[in-house]
Image (cartoon, rainbow, N blue to C red; front, side, top):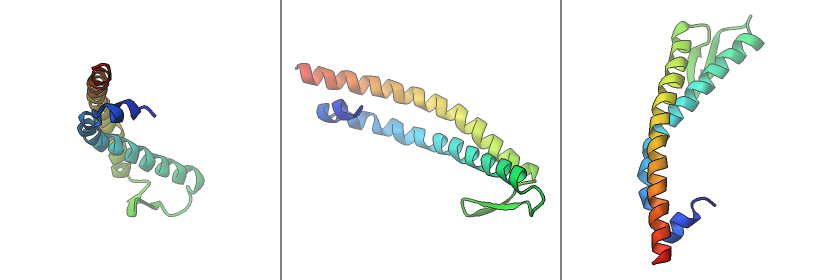
Length: 106
């Protein structure tokens, strides 16, 4: 629904490049969160079992500091970069919406 004015105004293309840039760090953040949650669940529910888990089809050792470090880097790094890129999305959104409204008034 929010994209409707941009589609009608023909300015949606101004926002798409920003979305494409923002999706990479946002996915990194989400993957880091999922990996961290998988490790936490394994330690709380299956602490006495084998520490090896599969996340995203990739084997990880839930007890390894490397696995926790990867999750932390993805969460912190992805979150930091995602926050910066979503500011760019907001600027692109405002520009596209302003242009769409200008076309409607013309």
